Length: 212
Ligand code: ADP
Ligand code: MG
Image (cartoon, rainbow, N blue to C red):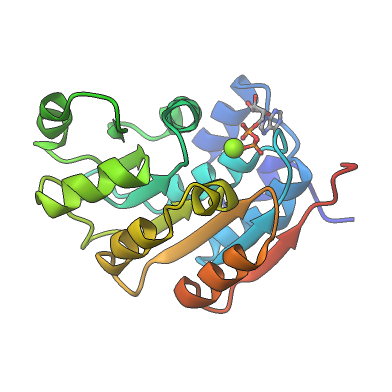
């Protein structure tokens, strides 16, 4: 039985304290199976149902790699919908309380473009958003991903169902090949397998059965 305490992970004691203040002491199964690999910089292909704690599984990992003194975008999380991006943004902001001066910007469709450009002006360590709007910002060069360290595809199956495959591929093309890629999905259809093969390097596969 692996240790499931957050304090067993190679993360800062400030983060362990922050997690405990959020009521997080033990890792959920998807966190326990993926975080040790995520923190080592490995690519992850994780399948686990809704409510299993996937956000912290990638959020704690991406925060660990961010240098707050450098204002380039170091982590990008792609989500299928604005509602999901909002939730992920809120959760990562809580996890980021342990890291001073981290800036997270939400970039979703259905919102005015101008204020988003303003919020990107002085840089954003973390960008969370929906594929279409992220691609718009990349095309207009209001967002650059050449310093990206961590790319997260959250609910990859849903994004592919929604027809975002080409947009996602175009976004990923604009990120460094050296990035870490974390792919999270509730299901594991052929489209997800195909996407994984084309964008991930030797990923660690994590599957959490739905009775957990
Ligand atoms: P998923 O993305 O898999 O649907 P979420 O990341 O949204 O799941 O997490 C589901 C809920 O579980 C959230 O309310 C979150 O705050 C809570 N949660 C996540 N990890 C833990 C943990 N280790 N201990 C306690 N609660 C947790
Ligand atoms: Mg989720």
